[in-house]
Length: 71
Image 1: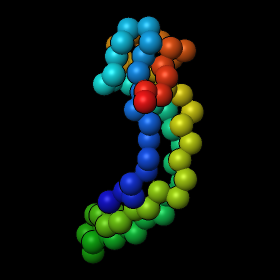
Image 2: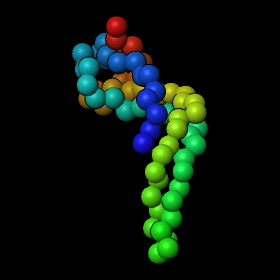
Image 3: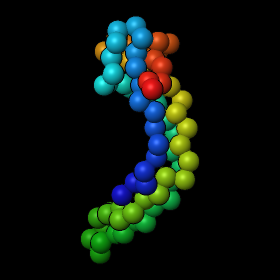
Image 4: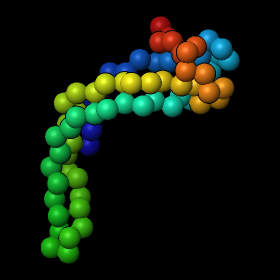
């Protein structure tokens, strides 16, 4: 389970999109990995320690320069 991270809602001022965005980000996490005797991995808990959003682009029109944080 990921810890809740506050992220802004985005809006594309070029096409009006409010729902679909391609977000490129880097996350630093701490996770508990549990392996079965057969070697299958199960991640039982995960905590986001930091997150950096590098780029946000509109999925509809592809424009990254017109995406703004919506209030």
